[in-house]
Length: 137
Image 1 (cartoon, rainbow, N blue to C red):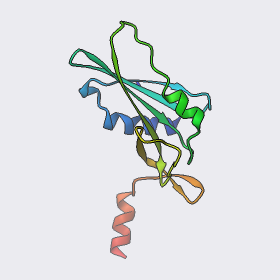
Image 2 (cartoon, helix red, strand yellow):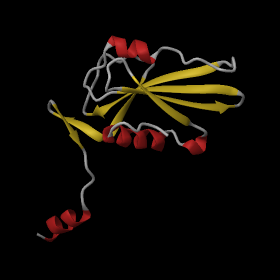
Image 3 (cartoon, rainbow, N blue to C red):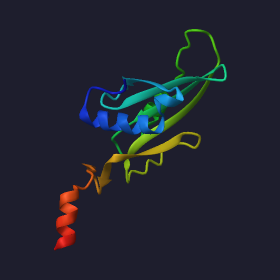
Image 4 (cartoon, rainbow, N blue to C red):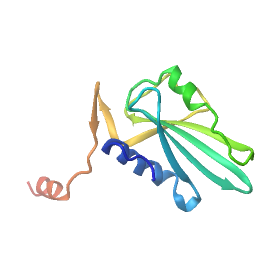
């Protein structure tokens, strides 16, 4: 389930599943975008006889291109002919402020990755032993 090609995508997949839980009926699939490294997570579930689809563009860049937004908005095919309620989101690293994301598309921030200046960094959880050593000093 979810992303499986890269450790960075594995961390992001965990973040997405913490927001959109399988307990709420969400099923997650992913696919690569035309950009190559970026992904689109497709979350689907049935609610009250309707099919709900949430598409999330996962990018590790500061800016989102118009081509990526166009690919995000491409409707998912339905196999059974039911009407689909679609919504869209873009997930970017923390401290990125993509101004190109239009209103109507949710902007999600990653907790595992952030920009420090122009550099993309992995945000690690602090190790408890280090915290205790700093507090003791």
